[in-house]
Length: 149
Image (cartoon, rainbow, N blue to C red):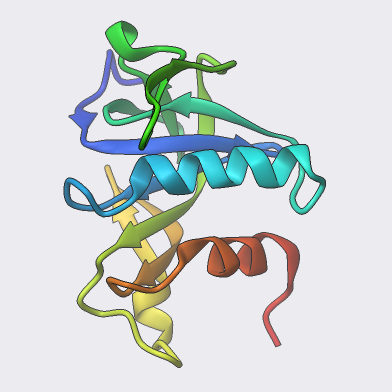
């Protein structure tokens, strides 16, 4: 595994065995989507979901996988708009299985296959581009619970 790995402005939630890495500009809704996924896990909409990290996470390669870890100073903390910074159960690491890019310029109704993947540290990972103003939770739930036709 690469040592430490780069720190990126993102949030991550482990849903079932893999993490959803949530990227986007400040104010795009990364923390909101992270909390929505945790709540979706608690209600049974998706598999069990637990925070990895909010606002800043570290990425590292392990073979042909990307592992995400919380920034140590932010471990177990999540921003809940209207309530502030709150404590939350978290895991110390997870393998990234899906990337969600909020406020993505290339989001389309019927996206071309090449926009549904991204490469991080040389590893290709499935990706969901989400246009500004569009709720990302239904797209993520659909990606996690349906199969491609």
